[in-house]
Image (cartoon, rainbow, N blue to C red; front, side, top):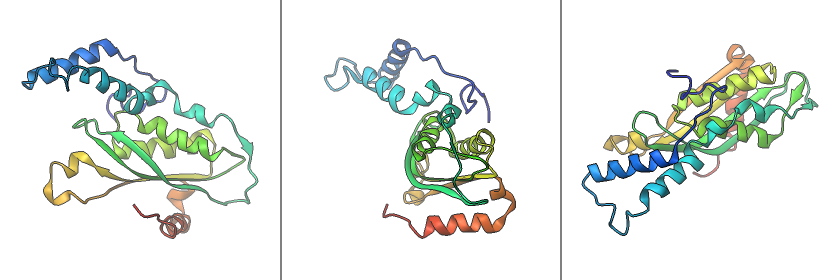
Length: 207
């Protein structure tokens, strides 16, 4: 996954320098030929830094596995799936620094413990709000559910619209991308994986 400090290591955190970020953005605009004295650009560097720190890099301020610390005894029958699907998410592609967004579907088969559905959504955002490939988010989410909850199986499916693809390729303007990651029973039992897909597809909302 590349440099683990940036691309998904849950044990690391960034230490951003907002002032340096503002200067870099200002320098970029000036290098592109713009004047920061223009009324519409005067506060652009500060605005850009604010949205990046609050919406695209805030995932580095947490250890995603911490969202799974509050657990409850599993009331589910042996082998029963827990599913949270069609969660809106967004992230930032590290290749072109362009955003992508879409739907996430998360599932696991409990062993002894479960967590609140809100904690599952928070786990997703903890990985998504980083410079991250779609494939890495899916892999990190599934792996964390599987290892931290000691689940019998875990899965994460991400369906997204990538700006870096849609803006650079005219024939891909309506394209959706998909990344899937499976652990444990979801990887070894095709019937369970098929059941997951049936549940997702039977309740697909309007985009």
